[in-house]
Image (cartoon, rainbow, N blue to C red; front, side, top):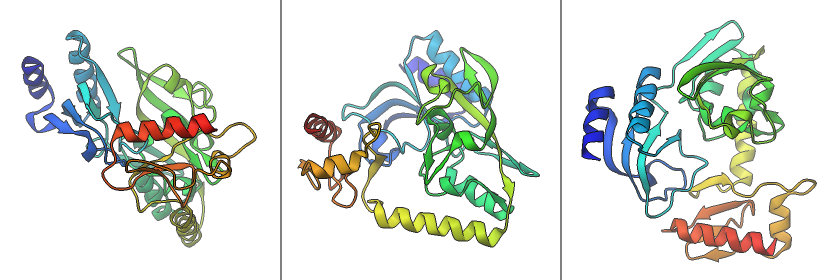
Length: 283
């Protein structure tokens, strides 16, 4: 492992490689043991180099963004965690098209769109994730989804950079071909519409107010935890089962929104998983 660390430092810079990094610092759940190696690439070349080194040394690697849809186990992660985030987050706007590196936060992209009087991305302004993760899982909220605004994206597939159009991305509800085939999103091109800055800003504030009122944003979580069964709402089913506020240790079904599992104190990943299992069994 020591040799790999030195190779990584030489390849992408010593400041971008950390040993034994607590993953609780990099997930919105604020839960998780240490990653053996934690790297923060600054360029496409850095990402390619890290993956090449990992594959040549048979070291497992994992891609994360803001860690907002992620639960890391208490014993941590063996191998390399590649965080594509703030150091890989450039945003370029030309006309009504926005080109975004995958580490950019959705909230930042929404703000940039608003500042340039571009509408159509307001739905994503309160989702606490990155463009890369959002494209991968076709993230959405309040009637909008990434598939509605994406023209194309660049991905890393089997060591090669490939460009996919909207259709080729194979978007489904909270899923995509990109996720299924474990591609790594590098960049996305979004097409929005011209609008009025004040109206866009007002809509974003309204949606974020709804989110703050209805969702337990005051507690660490990984967002909505349970997949919606076809024709039903998970939160209602959980509530109807009498599990509102149900806890295992310090992990809790949110009393505010039953679709969320929250960290109510010093919860462990094991407690969260046990809680999810119990809720699923009852459901």
